[in-house]
Image (cartoon, rainbow, N blue to C red; front, side, top):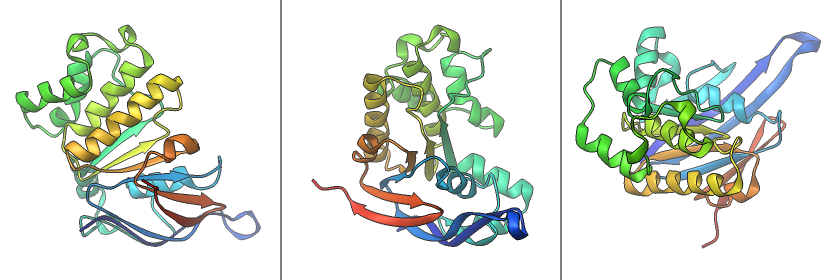
Length: 227
């Protein structure tokens, strides 16, 4: 079963001689539980693709389906609710709320949706993320790696169908980068999460189940990793 289906997506900024084709007729699908890396140089179209799949922007043409739902056909409010409940975002900048502690930051998406956290699941996430001893620490009291792990917990708490990670290790050293990627793999395996990871780091991409490359707005499927 494909959780994500991208069909002939194109995105053009500007018009006439000033037009820039950020994405050109991009198509691919991702089945449930797969961990996919999207690689490419700066300006290749990776972040544009991320924003379109996350319904943070609209394509010039094409279709995007998440769990069979055409997200582009939704009006603003239903699209916002669908995104909040079904897509988890992890960014290079951790985007934690400074006034909230680790546990509060993790459960915040549920509170936005007027839902009560499952205490057992919260405890499980804190354990998996190695944050139980830091649950009441504020973001400024955490290392970069700990902040990113809290951001991963925030993305997982709603049990979304799809997690979009945009350069999640960009601000981390090698050890913390490896730890974060290991956690994402754990999420894919343990919780059957479907993960789309955007990165320019070939070593990180090599840990994914499959690699897609974007160059000048054109996507190429490089296939599954070798075991």
